[in-house]
Image 1: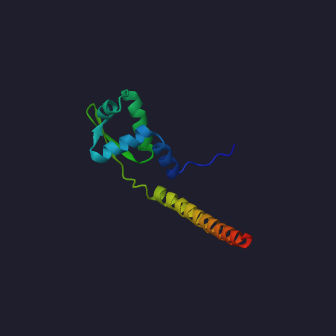
Image 2: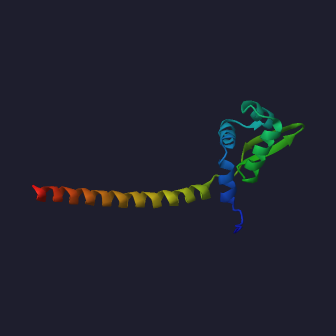
Image 3: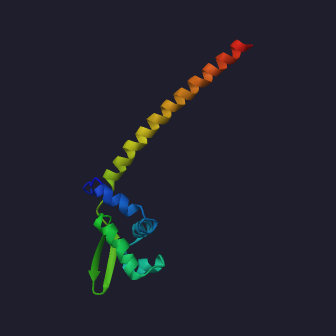
Length: 120
């Protein structure tokens, strides 16, 4: 099996692939929160939430700060520009393919219409 080095984009998409982690990002977009608060909102154990936050932190999407016994989470510095650019390239590719498909379908419709007139 070929091994590729993990890039930031890979880490981001891996982090975003989980609905709980996407929910954590949405929650942190509204307000900073402790891991305890997040665990409560998502009905999971502290250990489970720490793992989710760790994945988000490794991807640069979340930062944490420990003050006393409380670890507070907030959105990280990454703005997902590379990920958005990657998605945009594929959106453009698919748009071009669908435009070509539309052109082929319209040409087939015209040919069918002409063939129908010739039979009459």
